[in-house]
Amino acid sequence: MNKEVRDTLYTQAKEWVLEAGVRVRKQMLDPLVIHTKSSPRDLVTTVDQETERFFAMRIREQYPDHHLISEEGYGDRLHTTEGVVWIIDPIDGTTNFIHQRRNFAISLAIYVDGIGEIAFVYDIMQDYLYHAKRNEGAYKNHIRLKPLRRNFTVSESVLAMNNRWLIPNTLVDESVMEQLIQEVRGTRTYGSAALEFCYVAEGIVDGYLSHSLCPWDIAAGMILVREVGGITTNIDGDPVDILKKNSILTCNPSIQESIIKDYIEKGRKA
Image: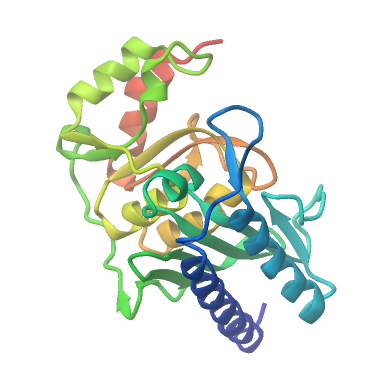
């Protein structure tokens, strides 16, 4: 994608993200219609659905040859990342949206032939817009994020991860993950994958480890982390398949190898 086309797409996407944020804020005090999806913890509201519809209608009207991957049913069923693909989570952190009215975000990414070109993660209530274009750095509002610090150990790091790692599961032995939690300087849980990627990019946390994330959870965040020198893989250290669910490690390169070899590989279940 040439720079002129990318800049035009970036400007249009930014306008839509900010407009969608205004629409969400206006609905914050309205009664929420809440449904469950795969489980009682997997929630969706009419605000999620209306926000996704907002993006889908505008993309299809203005860019009819582009594709869309999204959470709430307005996307395409894709088997390839060829062409221009928009990947959108209208509200990442729906549980936070419902219970806290904060710590949620709009996540939008544009990939071209499988390469992440443009990213936006909008923390609506804080009015923080994280954004990036490939090879042009990552920003929080108008401030460019610094390259990630280097040459430190797991014991000097703060990780974002939730308590699912300590519940018996089919991925990694929970006793080994408990050892990791005891080793690091601290752990945090924010309840929004998109924002947790942003916090890795910003250096607020040094890594984020999560079970079974969907493309719309990670697509924008991967670009932001990449632009500050971070790395995102699945938990085995392999490249992420952006069309599938992945259990993810996104982090500062200084600690990636140690987390995978000393903890994940050690506790990996067949």
